[in-house]
Image 1 (cartoon, protein in one colour):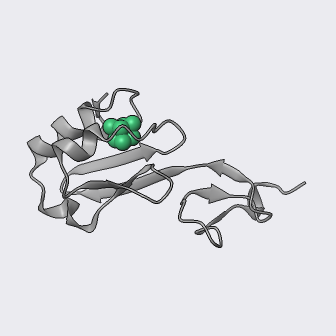
Image 2 (cartoon, protein in one colour):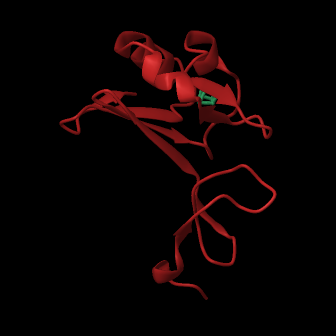
Image 3 (cartoon, protein in one colour):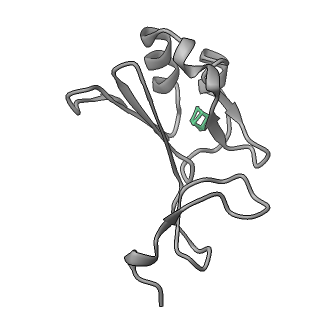
Length: 108
Ligand code: SF4
């Protein structure tokens, strides 16, 4: 049984999901994380149900991958802070969390 020393960050072959996996490919978590400005944004892709509310609110910041789960877009750095916070707060299942530079949780 693999230990935590065997954890690796990589994209699974043939899939686009990102996160932490044991070396045998078993997912440990599926968290996507991005820093932009003073914000640290995390998408818990296991919680995301793909309704797209975040995308509707900030289409330059988020999109659905080929599995219908939210991922970051490269344009996220061009989205203003208030729009980003509002978009993250739209998530109906609290799959997106946001911390500021002090580690204070702003969303949800
Ligand atoms: S709003 Fe939440 S559930 Fe909907 S696509 Fe975005 S992260 Fe997923």
